[in-house]
Image (cartoon, rainbow, N blue to C red):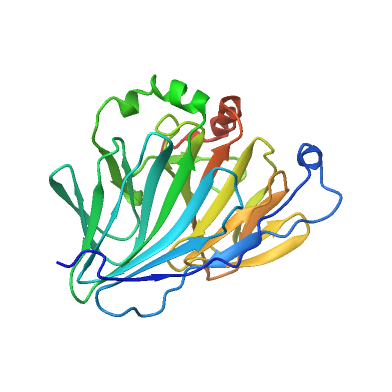
Length: 284
């Protein structure tokens, strides 16, 4: 199988948001628009690998990149001592090779290598695999904190289908909403990820969290609306959206439509992870 046979690099046109820190800790005087960028889902040439930076510069220390691999082709990545690596596969299928082992990739699978060994994604002829690559820069304190994380005791890989992840409940969501913790805290310092799924009419109630920066990733058939302060933003599938730091925000879905997205929390401090205590175990 050819490795990264043909590449196309797309430049991101999103403008980084600039927000006064003092305004983040109180109610904003004006609405701040949520920045958003959709994946390029056009048909690729066989053997082509698309690398598409998304929302460049939106969150300090966080890089988001859409990758699309049209078989027969391969794509390789690795974490390093300076940053964590998370891959979220959202459409198509392929195979992941890591430390001499092969893993099947299907839509809605997370992969996070714990070691810095090379990870390679292989896609066969006739298939196209789409994923989001997240790189999170470590601070010196992050590196110290992670020495105590039991989840990082091995040199393997954290790999799970979203639907195999533990569910939770939250007061701002209706009883019919399914929420899952896809990447628990203490895998990567000051970072957690999860999914929210429901059918309309429904909503995630308005809330504010000035202790964390947040990205939303629209998953398959998501057709909802994100409200940030007084601004409404249509939120389709396969798009990445940045919730303005400190904004009052929620999500709404109309009758017959689907809300299905991933939240990605990037905490400003370790203490900010206390927010995750609002996620209560699902006892059903």
